Length: 251
Image 1: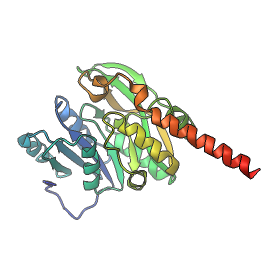
Image 2 (image 1 turned 180 degrees about the vertical axis):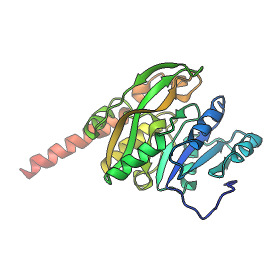
Image 3 (image 1 turned 60 degrees about the horizontal axis):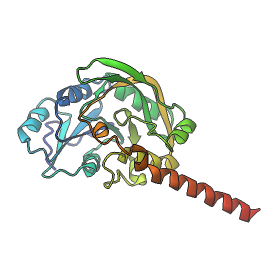
Image 4 (image 1 turned 135 degrees about the vertical axis):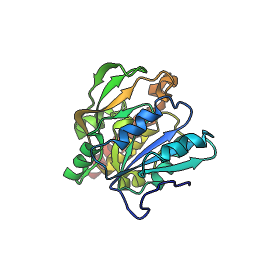
């Protein structure tokens, strides 16, 4: 790992924002700046160069702020790059931001406050403002807010936008990290594995601008989206059947 943070290496930030970068870098500057200008500043930004081969780009980013730390992957690792970034992070709270999205100034502070208010809350997101590739606002997307609604939604749809998420490192590690075999739905599976370990919540505020990016991973892998998460429904069904059998045997 290449660490070019010019700050105090012994200082441990409260929160770590982790961003992985590969081919599409059109909106990278805006994404990075949105983290550096947060109202909550007890944070670091881990930027993972996932095999881009563009070292000069990342050296320039690292010079912007002492809170930026770099992880350099010689080859593209895909999902495993996120795991490497989190391993390098020092904060107890992990936040994710995709390189085409923009965090509003209150984004980190509100998520940290929500986790501080509820010690059993381990996974929290929020609503989003939808923007296009020209930064034009095209809508708002509200998400299931309560723990119960999130648990119902996850069986059929992802109940979180990835760039809105914060979670406790302990929950991430207990859930087994992002599955490296999942190209697109790795976050959906991670939330499913976290839910038995903690409570979840979505805030009502729109604290991230989510970009409808025609070159993004979701847009370019839109077919068979439901089939990718069928194992989640199968595991839930098998769990329900097993619980019912145990209850019958005990009666």
